[in-house]
Image 1 (cartoon, chains in turn orange, blue):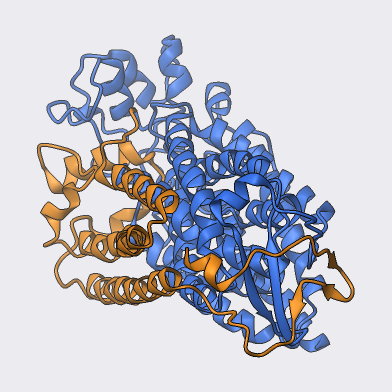
Image 2 (cartoon, helix red, strand yellow):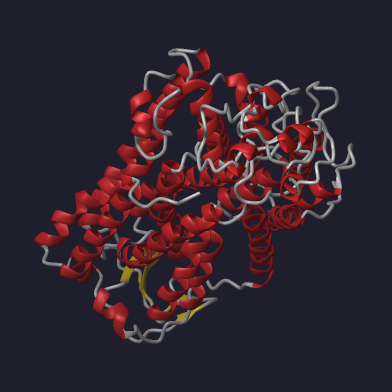
Amino acid sequence: MDNQERNPEPGRETMDEKEGPRSSSEDPSIDTGANEEQLLYAKILAVGMYFGLGILLVTFCLYLLGIPGPGVPIEELPRLWTLRAHEYLEAVNHQFLHREELLTGWRWVFVLNRGDYLNFVGIAVLAAVTIVCYMGVLPKLLKKRDWIYAGIAVLEIVILLLAASGVVSVGH
Amino acid sequence: MTRLSSCIRVLAVLTLLCAVKPPLVVAGGEGGGRDGALRAPGVSVSGALRVAGPEHTAPTPAASSNHEAPIPALAAARRSGASSWDVRTGGYPERAAPAPEVETTGDQHHAGAQEGEATGDQDHAAGVQQPATGMPGGEDTPWWVWPLSLFVLTFVMGILAALGGVGGGVLYVPIVSGFFPFHLDFVRGAGLLVALSGALAAGPGFLRMNLASLRLAMPVALIASTCAIAGAMVGLSLPTNVTQTALGATILGIVILMITAKKSTFPDVPESDRLSSVLGIYGIYTEASLGRAVNWKVHRTLPGLILFIGIGFAAGMFGLGAGWANVPVLNLVMGAPLKISVATSKFLLSITDTSAAWIYMNQGCVIPMMVVPSLVGIMLGSFIGVRILRVAKPTFVRWIVIVMLLFAGAKAITKGLGLPFIV
Protein backbone atom coordinates (compact mmCIF):
# COMPACT_ATOMS: atom_id res chain seq x y z
CA MET A 1 0.00 0.00 0.00
CA ASP A 2 1.53 3.24 -1.14
CA ASN A 3 0.25 5.22 1.79
CA GLN A 4 1.92 2.90 4.22
CA GLU A 5 5.16 2.96 2.27
CA ARG A 6 5.32 6.73 2.25
CA ASN A 7 3.75 7.44 5.59
CA PRO A 8 4.74 4.95 8.23
CA GLU A 9 1.99 4.72 10.82
CA PRO A 10 2.63 7.11 13.66
CA GLY A 11 3.08 5.61 17.05
CA ARG A 12 1.63 6.83 20.29
CA GLU A 13 2.86 10.35 19.86
CA THR A 14 0.63 13.00 21.32
CA MET A 15 -0.17 16.34 19.81
CA ASP A 16 0.30 19.60 21.60
CA GLU A 17 -1.86 22.57 20.74
CA LYS A 18 0.75 25.21 21.46
CA GLU A 19 3.97 23.59 20.46
CA GLY A 20 2.56 21.57 17.64
CA PRO A 21 2.47 17.83 17.25
CA ARG A 22 5.22 15.82 18.81
CA SER A 23 5.02 13.42 15.94
CA SER A 24 6.81 15.71 13.55
CA SER A 25 10.13 15.90 11.90
CA GLU A 26 12.35 18.66 10.57
CA ASP A 27 14.15 16.22 8.34
CA PRO A 28 13.76 17.70 4.83
CA SER A 29 14.33 14.31 3.25
CA ILE A 30 10.97 13.04 4.50
CA ASP A 31 8.54 12.77 1.66
CA THR A 32 5.33 14.53 2.62
CA GLY A 33 3.89 14.44 -0.87
CA ALA A 34 0.71 12.79 -2.00
CA ASN A 35 0.68 9.20 -3.14
CA GLU A 36 0.34 8.09 -6.73
CA GLU A 37 -3.42 7.55 -6.92
CA GLN A 38 -4.10 10.82 -5.11
CA LEU A 39 -2.02 12.73 -7.64
CA LEU A 40 -3.79 10.99 -10.50
CA TYR A 41 -7.16 11.81 -8.95
CA ALA A 42 -6.12 15.47 -8.64
CA LYS A 43 -5.00 15.57 -12.24
CA ILE A 44 -8.24 14.16 -13.63
CA LEU A 45 -10.26 16.41 -11.31
CA ALA A 46 -8.45 19.54 -12.48
CA VAL A 47 -8.82 18.70 -16.18
CA GLY A 48 -12.49 17.81 -15.78
CA MET A 49 -13.22 20.91 -13.74
CA TYR A 50 -11.65 23.29 -16.25
CA PHE A 51 -13.26 21.45 -19.14
CA GLY A 52 -16.73 21.54 -17.57
CA LEU A 53 -16.44 25.11 -16.42
CA GLY A 54 -15.22 26.20 -19.87
CA ILE A 55 -18.12 24.50 -21.59
CA LEU A 56 -20.57 25.99 -19.11
CA LEU A 57 -19.33 29.54 -19.61
CA VAL A 58 -19.25 29.26 -23.41
CA THR A 59 -22.72 27.72 -23.63
CA PHE A 60 -24.13 30.31 -21.23
CA CYS A 61 -22.74 33.13 -23.37
CA LEU A 62 -24.32 31.52 -26.43
CA TYR A 63 -27.58 31.21 -24.49
CA LEU A 64 -27.54 34.90 -23.65
CA LEU A 65 -26.81 35.74 -27.28
CA GLY A 66 -29.68 33.54 -28.40
CA ILE A 67 -27.43 31.15 -30.35
CA PRO A 68 -29.23 28.79 -30.69
CA GLY A 69 -32.63 30.03 -29.56
CA PRO A 70 -33.74 28.93 -26.10
CA GLY A 71 -36.39 26.30 -25.52
CA VAL A 72 -37.96 28.49 -22.85
CA PRO A 73 -37.98 32.20 -23.68
CA ILE A 74 -35.84 33.98 -21.12
CA GLU A 75 -38.48 36.58 -20.38
CA GLU A 76 -40.89 33.79 -19.42
CA LEU A 77 -38.61 32.41 -16.73
CA PRO A 78 -39.76 34.69 -13.88
CA ARG A 79 -43.22 33.16 -13.96
CA LEU A 80 -41.91 29.61 -14.15
CA TRP A 81 -39.16 29.42 -11.57
CA THR A 82 -41.62 29.91 -8.74
CA LEU A 83 -43.19 26.52 -9.47
CA ARG A 84 -42.15 23.18 -8.04
CA ALA A 85 -39.71 21.41 -10.32
CA HIS A 86 -42.21 18.90 -11.63
CA GLU A 87 -44.78 21.59 -12.27
CA TYR A 88 -42.13 23.67 -14.01
CA LEU A 89 -41.35 20.75 -16.31
CA GLU A 90 -45.04 20.26 -17.07
CA ALA A 91 -45.55 23.92 -17.81
CA VAL A 92 -42.45 24.18 -19.99
CA ASN A 93 -43.37 21.06 -21.91
CA HIS A 94 -46.94 22.15 -22.46
CA GLN A 95 -46.19 25.69 -23.49
CA PHE A 96 -42.90 25.51 -25.30
CA LEU A 97 -41.43 22.10 -25.96
CA HIS A 98 -44.51 20.00 -26.75
CA ARG A 99 -42.76 16.70 -26.24
CA GLU A 100 -44.42 13.44 -25.38
CA GLU A 101 -42.51 13.10 -22.14
CA LEU A 102 -41.28 15.59 -19.60
CA LEU A 103 -37.59 16.44 -19.69
CA THR A 104 -36.56 14.51 -16.64
CA GLY A 105 -33.44 12.41 -16.44
CA TRP A 106 -31.26 12.59 -19.51
CA ARG A 107 -34.01 13.64 -21.91
CA TRP A 108 -32.42 17.07 -22.11
CA VAL A 109 -29.97 15.60 -24.62
CA PHE A 110 -32.81 15.51 -27.16
CA VAL A 111 -33.17 19.29 -27.01
CA LEU A 112 -29.53 20.29 -27.19
CA ASN A 113 -30.43 22.41 -30.18
CA ARG A 114 -31.94 24.86 -27.67
CA GLY A 115 -29.60 27.36 -26.04
CA ASP A 116 -30.80 26.87 -22.48
CA TYR A 117 -30.55 23.09 -22.56
CA LEU A 118 -27.09 23.33 -24.13
CA ASN A 119 -25.92 24.56 -20.72
CA PHE A 120 -26.69 21.15 -19.29
CA VAL A 121 -23.65 19.74 -21.10
CA GLY A 122 -21.28 21.75 -18.92
CA ILE A 123 -23.26 21.01 -15.77
CA ALA A 124 -23.24 17.29 -16.58
CA VAL A 125 -19.48 17.35 -17.15
CA LEU A 126 -18.94 19.01 -13.77
CA ALA A 127 -21.19 16.46 -12.11
CA ALA A 128 -19.56 13.54 -13.91
CA VAL A 129 -15.92 14.38 -13.31
CA THR A 130 -15.87 12.64 -9.92
CA ILE A 131 -17.02 9.39 -11.52
CA VAL A 132 -14.19 9.64 -14.05
CA CYS A 133 -11.72 10.29 -11.22
CA TYR A 134 -12.78 7.12 -9.41
CA MET A 135 -12.59 5.14 -12.64
CA GLY A 136 -9.11 6.54 -13.16
CA VAL A 137 -7.72 5.51 -9.77
CA LEU A 138 -9.42 2.11 -9.67
CA PRO A 139 -6.80 0.34 -11.84
CA LYS A 140 -4.02 1.72 -9.64
CA LEU A 141 -5.73 0.45 -6.50
CA LEU A 142 -6.23 -2.97 -8.07
CA LYS A 143 -2.62 -3.05 -9.22
CA LYS A 144 -1.50 -2.40 -5.65
CA ARG A 145 -3.87 -5.09 -4.41
CA ASP A 146 -5.49 -2.52 -2.16
CA TRP A 147 -8.69 -4.53 -2.19
CA ILE A 148 -10.54 -2.53 0.46
CA TYR A 149 -10.12 0.78 -1.32
CA ALA A 150 -10.70 -0.81 -4.71
CA GLY A 151 -14.00 -2.12 -3.33
CA ILE A 152 -14.88 1.30 -1.96
CA ALA A 153 -14.07 2.85 -5.34
CA VAL A 154 -16.26 0.33 -7.16
CA LEU A 155 -19.14 0.94 -4.77
CA GLU A 156 -18.79 4.69 -5.14
CA ILE A 157 -18.79 4.41 -8.93
CA VAL A 158 -21.95 2.30 -8.76
CA ILE A 159 -23.64 4.76 -6.41
CA LEU A 160 -22.76 7.78 -8.54
CA LEU A 161 -23.73 6.03 -11.78
CA LEU A 162 -27.02 5.07 -10.19
CA ALA A 163 -27.64 8.69 -9.22
CA ALA A 164 -26.57 9.95 -12.64
CA SER A 165 -28.60 7.40 -14.56
CA GLY A 166 -31.91 8.76 -13.41
CA VAL A 167 -32.97 5.30 -12.24
CA VAL A 168 -33.32 6.72 -8.76
CA SER A 169 -36.25 9.07 -9.07
CA VAL A 170 -38.72 10.84 -6.90
CA GLY A 171 -42.44 10.54 -7.41
CA HIS A 172 -44.60 13.62 -7.34
CA MET B 1 -8.20 47.45 7.66
CA THR B 2 -10.99 49.43 9.25
CA ARG B 3 -11.88 50.85 5.88
CA LEU B 4 -11.86 47.41 4.39
CA SER B 5 -14.10 46.07 7.11
CA SER B 6 -16.48 48.98 6.54
CA CYS B 7 -16.53 48.24 2.83
CA ILE B 8 -17.36 44.62 3.49
CA ARG B 9 -20.09 45.64 5.90
CA VAL B 10 -21.61 48.07 3.37
CA LEU B 11 -21.41 45.47 0.61
CA ALA B 12 -23.15 42.91 2.78
CA VAL B 13 -25.93 45.30 3.73
CA LEU B 14 -26.39 46.47 0.13
CA THR B 15 -26.59 42.95 -1.11
CA LEU B 16 -29.06 41.92 1.52
CA LEU B 17 -31.17 44.94 0.70
CA CYS B 18 -30.90 44.10 -2.95
CA ALA B 19 -32.02 40.59 -2.21
CA VAL B 20 -34.74 41.56 0.20
CA LYS B 21 -36.37 44.34 -1.72
CA PRO B 22 -37.70 42.52 -4.78
CA PRO B 23 -39.52 39.72 -2.95
CA LEU B 24 -41.36 42.30 -0.90
CA VAL B 25 -42.90 43.32 -4.14
CA VAL B 26 -43.30 40.01 -5.83
CA ALA B 27 -43.32 37.16 -3.38
CA GLY B 28 -46.90 37.29 -2.50
CA GLY B 29 -46.92 33.78 -1.23
CA GLU B 30 -44.59 33.47 1.65
CA GLY B 31 -43.43 30.01 2.31
CA GLY B 32 -44.06 26.75 0.69
CA GLY B 33 -47.41 25.62 -0.38
CA ARG B 34 -48.92 22.22 0.04
CA ASP B 35 -47.52 19.54 -2.07
CA GLY B 36 -49.10 19.06 -5.40
CA ALA B 37 -50.34 22.55 -5.95
CA LEU B 38 -49.01 25.19 -8.21
CA ARG B 39 -48.32 28.45 -6.49
CA ALA B 40 -49.40 31.78 -7.72
CA PRO B 41 -48.98 34.14 -4.85
CA GLY B 42 -50.18 37.15 -6.74
CA VAL B 43 -53.74 38.32 -6.36
CA SER B 44 -55.48 39.46 -9.46
CA VAL B 45 -57.39 42.63 -9.86
CA SER B 46 -59.47 42.92 -12.99
CA GLY B 47 -57.32 40.49 -14.83
CA ALA B 48 -54.39 42.83 -14.82
CA LEU B 49 -51.03 41.42 -14.04
CA ARG B 50 -50.22 42.44 -10.52
CA VAL B 51 -47.69 41.22 -8.11
CA ALA B 52 -48.53 41.67 -4.52
CA GLY B 53 -47.31 40.10 -1.37
CA PRO B 54 -49.14 39.69 1.88
CA GLU B 55 -47.49 42.89 2.97
CA HIS B 56 -49.53 44.68 0.36
CA THR B 57 -52.63 42.62 0.03
CA ALA B 58 -54.58 40.98 2.74
CA PRO B 59 -54.98 37.39 1.66
CA THR B 60 -58.14 35.45 2.15
CA PRO B 61 -58.15 33.16 5.17
CA ALA B 62 -57.89 30.19 2.86
CA ALA B 63 -54.95 31.68 1.10
CA SER B 64 -53.18 32.63 4.24
CA SER B 65 -53.47 29.09 5.42
CA ASN B 66 -51.81 27.86 2.31
CA HIS B 67 -49.32 30.66 1.78
CA GLU B 68 -49.14 30.04 -1.91
CA ALA B 69 -52.15 29.66 -4.06
CA PRO B 70 -52.13 27.12 -6.83
CA ILE B 71 -52.35 28.31 -10.35
CA PRO B 72 -56.00 27.49 -10.91
CA ALA B 73 -55.89 25.59 -14.18
CA LEU B 74 -53.32 23.08 -13.06
CA ALA B 75 -54.97 22.74 -9.69
CA ALA B 76 -58.19 21.94 -11.49
CA ALA B 77 -56.41 19.46 -13.71
CA ARG B 78 -55.08 17.79 -10.61
CA ARG B 79 -58.52 17.64 -9.02
CA SER B 80 -59.98 16.18 -12.15
CA GLY B 81 -57.68 13.26 -11.79
CA ALA B 82 -54.81 14.28 -14.04
CA SER B 83 -51.65 13.12 -12.38
CA SER B 84 -49.56 15.11 -14.80
CA TRP B 85 -50.07 17.95 -17.14
CA ASP B 86 -53.22 17.53 -19.18
CA VAL B 87 -52.69 19.02 -22.58
CA ARG B 88 -56.32 18.54 -23.60
CA THR B 89 -57.56 20.68 -20.77
CA GLY B 90 -54.87 23.24 -21.30
CA GLY B 91 -53.75 22.81 -17.74
CA TYR B 92 -51.52 25.81 -17.55
CA PRO B 93 -52.69 29.30 -18.36
CA GLU B 94 -50.71 31.05 -21.03
CA ARG B 95 -49.65 33.93 -18.82
CA ALA B 96 -50.33 32.21 -15.55
CA ALA B 97 -53.56 34.11 -15.53
CA PRO B 98 -56.66 32.34 -14.31
CA ALA B 99 -57.81 31.97 -17.90
CA PRO B 100 -61.17 30.34 -17.34
CA GLU B 101 -61.31 29.38 -20.99
CA VAL B 102 -58.60 26.80 -20.49
CA GLU B 103 -60.62 25.17 -17.78
CA THR B 104 -62.54 22.51 -19.63
CA THR B 105 -62.99 20.04 -16.87
CA GLY B 106 -66.46 21.21 -16.13
CA ASP B 107 -65.53 22.31 -12.68
CA GLN B 108 -67.72 25.31 -12.29
CA HIS B 109 -66.48 25.90 -8.80
CA HIS B 110 -63.10 26.48 -10.18
CA ALA B 111 -64.30 29.07 -12.62
CA GLY B 112 -66.15 30.72 -9.82
CA ALA B 113 -63.08 30.90 -7.74
CA GLN B 114 -61.25 32.46 -10.62
CA GLU B 115 -63.69 35.26 -10.43
CA GLY B 116 -62.82 35.65 -6.82
CA GLU B 117 -66.11 34.28 -5.60
CA ALA B 118 -66.71 32.08 -2.63
CA THR B 119 -67.48 28.73 -4.14
CA GLY B 120 -68.14 26.61 -1.16
CA ASP B 121 -65.66 24.09 -2.51
CA GLN B 122 -63.48 23.82 0.51
CA ASP B 123 -60.78 21.91 -1.25
CA HIS B 124 -60.71 24.46 -3.94
CA ALA B 125 -60.95 27.33 -1.53
CA ALA B 126 -57.98 26.01 0.34
CA GLY B 127 -56.03 25.67 -2.84
CA VAL B 128 -56.98 28.73 -4.84
CA GLN B 129 -56.42 32.00 -3.19
CA GLN B 130 -58.00 34.40 -5.60
CA PRO B 131 -57.82 34.88 -9.31
CA ALA B 132 -54.10 34.77 -9.78
CA THR B 133 -53.14 36.93 -12.62
CA GLY B 134 -50.10 38.22 -10.83
CA MET B 135 -46.77 36.70 -11.50
CA PRO B 136 -45.09 35.32 -8.45
CA GLY B 137 -41.68 35.55 -10.05
CA GLY B 138 -41.92 39.27 -10.49
CA GLU B 139 -43.00 39.60 -14.09
CA ASP B 140 -43.16 43.33 -13.60
CA THR B 141 -39.48 43.15 -12.98
CA PRO B 142 -37.29 42.69 -16.06
CA TRP B 143 -35.98 39.11 -16.18
CA TRP B 144 -32.34 40.17 -16.11
CA VAL B 145 -32.73 41.73 -12.68
CA TRP B 146 -32.87 38.29 -11.08
CA PRO B 147 -29.70 36.72 -12.51
CA LEU B 148 -27.91 40.02 -12.02
CA SER B 149 -29.05 40.18 -8.38
CA LEU B 150 -27.97 36.59 -7.95
CA PHE B 151 -24.57 37.38 -9.38
CA VAL B 152 -24.06 40.36 -7.05
CA LEU B 153 -25.34 38.44 -4.04
CA THR B 154 -23.23 35.37 -4.70
CA PHE B 155 -20.18 37.53 -5.37
CA VAL B 156 -20.52 39.02 -1.89
CA MET B 157 -21.32 35.58 -0.49
CA GLY B 158 -18.14 34.26 -2.06
CA ILE B 159 -16.11 36.95 -0.32
CA LEU B 160 -17.80 36.37 3.02
CA ALA B 161 -17.61 32.59 2.69
CA ALA B 162 -13.88 32.72 2.07
CA LEU B 163 -13.35 35.14 4.96
CA GLY B 164 -15.79 33.43 7.29
CA GLY B 165 -14.46 29.96 6.66
CA VAL B 166 -17.71 28.47 5.38
CA GLY B 167 -18.70 27.03 2.05
CA GLY B 168 -20.94 28.93 -0.33
CA GLY B 169 -23.85 26.48 -0.22
CA VAL B 170 -24.69 27.02 3.42
CA LEU B 171 -25.17 30.73 2.78
CA TYR B 172 -26.68 30.37 -0.67
CA VAL B 173 -29.68 28.13 -0.02
CA PRO B 174 -31.25 29.85 2.99
CA ILE B 175 -30.65 33.37 1.73
CA VAL B 176 -31.71 32.85 -1.87
CA SER B 177 -34.71 30.71 -0.94
CA GLY B 178 -35.73 33.24 1.67
CA PHE B 179 -35.43 36.43 -0.30
CA PHE B 180 -35.75 35.52 -3.98
CA PRO B 181 -38.84 34.30 -5.82
CA PHE B 182 -37.26 31.03 -6.97
CA HIS B 183 -38.85 27.82 -5.73
CA LEU B 184 -36.86 25.94 -3.13
CA ASP B 185 -36.38 23.01 -5.54
CA PHE B 186 -34.34 25.16 -7.91
CA VAL B 187 -32.47 26.91 -5.12
CA ARG B 188 -31.36 23.58 -3.68
CA GLY B 189 -30.31 22.35 -7.11
CA ALA B 190 -28.31 25.52 -7.73
CA GLY B 191 -26.91 25.46 -4.18
CA LEU B 192 -25.53 21.97 -4.68
CA LEU B 193 -23.93 22.95 -7.98
CA VAL B 194 -22.44 26.07 -6.39
CA ALA B 195 -20.95 23.99 -3.56
CA LEU B 196 -19.84 21.33 -6.03
CA SER B 197 -18.04 23.85 -8.24
CA GLY B 198 -16.21 25.34 -5.28
CA ALA B 199 -15.12 21.87 -4.19
CA LEU B 200 -14.03 20.93 -7.70
CA ALA B 201 -11.99 24.11 -7.94
CA ALA B 202 -10.26 23.62 -4.60
CA GLY B 203 -9.92 19.83 -4.67
CA PRO B 204 -6.97 19.34 -7.04
CA GLY B 205 -4.76 21.80 -5.17
CA PHE B 206 -5.54 20.31 -1.77
CA LEU B 207 -4.92 16.79 -3.05
CA ARG B 208 -1.57 17.72 -4.61
CA MET B 209 -0.45 19.43 -1.41
CA ASN B 210 -1.47 16.29 0.46
CA LEU B 211 -3.69 18.36 2.74
CA ALA B 212 -6.79 16.60 1.46
CA SER B 213 -6.44 12.89 2.08
CA LEU B 214 -7.97 10.56 -0.47
CA ARG B 215 -7.73 7.66 1.99
CA LEU B 216 -9.63 9.60 4.62
CA ALA B 217 -12.18 10.92 2.13
CA MET B 218 -13.07 7.72 0.26
CA PRO B 219 -14.80 5.74 3.04
CA VAL B 220 -16.47 8.87 4.37
CA ALA B 221 -17.61 9.90 0.89
CA LEU B 222 -19.15 6.52 0.20
CA ILE B 223 -21.42 6.89 3.21
CA ALA B 224 -22.13 10.59 2.76
CA SER B 225 -22.87 10.38 -0.96
CA THR B 226 -25.21 7.43 -0.53
CA CYS B 227 -27.10 9.24 2.20
CA ALA B 228 -27.11 12.45 0.16
CA ILE B 229 -29.10 10.61 -2.51
CA ALA B 230 -31.63 9.52 0.11
CA GLY B 231 -31.73 13.07 1.49
CA ALA B 232 -32.31 14.55 -1.94
CA MET B 233 -35.17 12.15 -2.60
CA VAL B 234 -36.79 12.91 0.73
CA GLY B 235 -36.29 16.64 0.27
CA LEU B 236 -37.93 16.56 -3.13
CA SER B 237 -40.82 14.45 -1.89
CA LEU B 238 -41.78 16.51 1.13
CA PRO B 239 -44.10 19.49 0.92
CA THR B 240 -42.13 22.66 0.37
CA ASN B 241 -43.18 24.28 3.62
CA VAL B 242 -41.97 21.27 5.60
CA THR B 243 -38.60 21.29 3.86
CA GLN B 244 -38.33 25.05 4.26
CA THR B 245 -39.06 24.86 7.99
CA ALA B 246 -36.58 22.03 8.45
CA LEU B 247 -34.02 24.02 6.49
CA GLY B 248 -34.50 26.97 8.83
CA ALA B 249 -34.10 24.77 11.88
CA THR B 250 -30.94 23.23 10.40
CA ILE B 251 -29.48 26.64 9.63
CA LEU B 252 -30.10 27.77 13.21
CA GLY B 253 -28.44 24.56 14.37
CA ILE B 254 -25.45 25.42 12.19
CA VAL B 255 -25.31 28.86 13.80
CA ILE B 256 -25.16 27.26 17.24
CA LEU B 257 -22.49 24.88 16.00
CA MET B 258 -20.46 27.78 14.59
CA ILE B 259 -20.68 29.72 17.84
CA THR B 260 -19.98 26.86 20.23
CA ALA B 261 -17.75 24.39 18.40
CA LYS B 262 -14.10 24.56 19.25
CA LYS B 263 -11.37 23.72 16.83
CA SER B 264 -8.22 21.87 17.52
CA THR B 265 -5.22 22.53 15.34
CA PHE B 266 -3.52 19.31 16.38
CA PRO B 267 -6.04 17.06 18.17
CA ASP B 268 -4.62 14.56 20.60
CA VAL B 269 -4.92 11.11 19.08
CA PRO B 270 -3.14 8.71 21.43
CA GLU B 271 -3.67 5.73 19.22
CA SER B 272 -5.29 4.82 15.92
CA ASP B 273 -8.40 2.75 16.28
CA ARG B 274 -8.68 -0.64 14.67
CA LEU B 275 -10.85 0.47 11.76
CA SER B 276 -8.62 3.35 10.73
CA SER B 277 -5.59 1.06 10.99
CA VAL B 278 -7.24 -1.48 8.70
CA LEU B 279 -8.20 1.26 6.27
CA GLY B 280 -4.76 2.83 6.51
CA ILE B 281 -6.09 6.27 7.33
CA TYR B 282 -3.04 8.22 8.37
CA GLY B 283 -0.56 10.45 6.65
CA ILE B 284 2.10 13.09 6.79
CA TYR B 285 2.07 16.65 5.56
CA THR B 286 4.27 19.70 5.72
CA GLU B 287 3.03 22.21 8.28
CA ALA B 288 4.26 25.50 6.86
CA SER B 289 3.69 27.41 10.10
CA LEU B 290 6.01 25.02 11.94
CA GLY B 291 8.35 24.40 9.06
CA ARG B 292 8.31 20.65 9.53
CA ALA B 293 6.54 17.48 8.60
CA VAL B 294 3.59 16.41 10.73
CA ASN B 295 2.34 12.86 11.10
CA TRP B 296 -1.34 12.45 11.65
CA LYS B 297 -3.75 9.63 12.31
CA VAL B 298 -7.38 9.33 13.33
CA HIS B 299 -9.43 7.55 15.94
CA ARG B 300 -13.14 7.09 16.69
CA THR B 301 -13.56 6.19 13.02
CA LEU B 302 -16.83 4.30 13.41
CA PRO B 303 -18.67 7.10 15.29
CA GLY B 304 -17.31 9.53 12.71
CA LEU B 305 -18.61 7.45 9.82
CA ILE B 306 -21.99 7.12 11.50
CA LEU B 307 -22.20 10.90 11.87
CA PHE B 308 -21.62 11.24 8.14
CA ILE B 309 -24.91 9.43 7.56
CA GLY B 310 -26.72 12.45 8.94
CA ILE B 311 -24.39 14.94 7.29
CA GLY B 312 -24.86 13.40 3.85
CA PHE B 313 -28.60 13.24 4.33
CA ALA B 314 -28.81 16.91 5.31
CA ALA B 315 -26.57 17.94 2.42
CA GLY B 316 -28.82 16.18 -0.06
CA MET B 317 -32.08 17.21 1.52
CA PHE B 318 -31.33 20.91 1.78
CA GLY B 319 -28.80 21.34 -1.02
CA LEU B 320 -26.24 22.61 1.44
CA GLY B 321 -22.57 22.04 1.12
CA ALA B 322 -21.73 20.15 4.28
CA GLY B 323 -18.43 21.75 5.24
CA TRP B 324 -20.05 23.17 8.38
CA ALA B 325 -20.44 19.62 9.68
CA ASN B 326 -17.59 17.85 7.91
CA VAL B 327 -14.88 19.87 9.61
CA PRO B 328 -16.07 19.41 13.22
CA VAL B 329 -16.52 15.66 12.74
CA LEU B 330 -13.17 15.13 11.02
CA ASN B 331 -11.35 17.43 13.43
CA LEU B 332 -13.03 16.99 16.80
CA VAL B 333 -14.48 13.49 16.56
CA MET B 334 -11.96 11.67 14.40
CA GLY B 335 -8.98 13.76 15.43
CA ALA B 336 -7.57 14.81 12.08
CA PRO B 337 -5.46 17.99 12.21
CA LEU B 338 -7.43 21.13 11.39
CA LYS B 339 -5.75 21.71 8.04
CA ILE B 340 -6.32 18.13 6.98
CA SER B 341 -9.95 18.37 8.13
CA VAL B 342 -10.66 21.59 6.26
CA ALA B 343 -9.00 20.48 3.03
CA THR B 344 -10.47 16.97 3.12
CA SER B 345 -13.90 18.42 3.90
CA LYS B 346 -13.72 20.70 0.89
CA PHE B 347 -12.63 17.85 -1.34
CA LEU B 348 -15.29 15.60 0.16
CA LEU B 349 -18.01 17.97 -1.04
CA SER B 350 -17.01 17.25 -4.63
CA ILE B 351 -18.14 13.65 -4.08
CA THR B 352 -21.07 14.11 -1.69
CA ASP B 353 -22.64 16.93 -3.65
CA THR B 354 -22.14 15.13 -6.95
CA SER B 355 -24.52 12.34 -6.02
CA ALA B 356 -27.22 14.72 -4.76
CA ALA B 357 -26.69 17.09 -7.69
CA TRP B 358 -27.50 14.27 -10.12
CA ILE B 359 -30.79 13.59 -8.33
CA TYR B 360 -31.78 17.26 -8.51
CA MET B 361 -30.66 17.51 -12.12
CA ASN B 362 -32.57 14.42 -13.15
CA GLN B 363 -35.69 15.82 -11.49
CA GLY B 364 -35.45 19.03 -13.51
CA CYS B 365 -34.37 21.20 -10.59
CA VAL B 366 -31.71 23.02 -12.58
CA ILE B 367 -32.32 26.31 -14.37
CA PRO B 368 -29.12 27.52 -16.08
CA MET B 369 -30.18 31.16 -15.71
CA MET B 370 -29.95 30.66 -11.94
CA VAL B 371 -27.00 28.31 -11.80
CA VAL B 372 -24.42 30.02 -13.98
CA PRO B 373 -24.62 33.57 -12.53
CA SER B 374 -24.52 32.04 -9.03
CA LEU B 375 -21.59 29.84 -9.84
CA VAL B 376 -19.55 32.59 -11.49
CA GLY B 377 -20.44 35.06 -8.76
CA ILE B 378 -19.39 32.84 -5.90
CA MET B 379 -16.17 31.75 -7.59
CA LEU B 380 -15.15 35.35 -8.34
CA GLY B 381 -16.12 36.34 -4.82
CA SER B 382 -14.07 33.53 -3.32
CA PHE B 383 -11.13 34.60 -5.44
CA ILE B 384 -11.38 38.16 -4.11
CA GLY B 385 -12.13 36.92 -0.60
CA VAL B 386 -8.95 34.91 -0.39
CA ARG B 387 -6.98 38.05 -1.27
CA ILE B 388 -8.88 40.19 1.23
CA LEU B 389 -8.24 37.54 3.86
CA ARG B 390 -4.67 38.77 4.15
CA VAL B 391 -5.80 42.11 5.59
CA ALA B 392 -9.32 41.55 6.94
CA LYS B 393 -10.34 40.57 10.44
CA PRO B 394 -11.67 37.03 10.09
CA THR B 395 -13.40 37.15 13.47
CA PHE B 396 -15.46 40.16 12.45
CA VAL B 397 -16.39 38.55 9.13
CA ARG B 398 -17.24 35.32 10.88
CA TRP B 399 -19.77 37.20 12.99
CA ILE B 400 -21.24 38.77 9.84
CA VAL B 401 -21.70 35.27 8.45
CA ILE B 402 -23.29 34.09 11.69
CA VAL B 403 -25.72 37.02 11.71
CA MET B 404 -26.58 36.39 8.06
CA LEU B 405 -27.23 32.73 8.78
CA LEU B 406 -29.31 33.61 11.82
CA PHE B 407 -31.35 36.00 9.74
CA ALA B 408 -31.75 33.52 6.87
CA GLY B 409 -32.60 30.65 9.23
CA ALA B 410 -35.29 32.68 10.94
CA LYS B 411 -36.65 33.73 7.57
CA ALA B 412 -36.77 30.11 6.38
CA ILE B 413 -38.67 28.99 9.48
CA THR B 414 -41.20 31.79 9.32
CA LYS B 415 -41.61 31.25 5.61
CA GLY B 416 -42.14 27.54 6.08
CA LEU B 417 -44.65 28.09 8.87
CA GLY B 418 -46.36 30.93 7.08
CA LEU B 419 -45.57 33.39 9.84
CA PRO B 420 -44.81 37.05 9.28
CA PHE B 421 -41.18 38.09 9.19
CA ILE B 422 -39.54 41.35 10.07
CA VAL B 423 -38.90 42.16 6.40
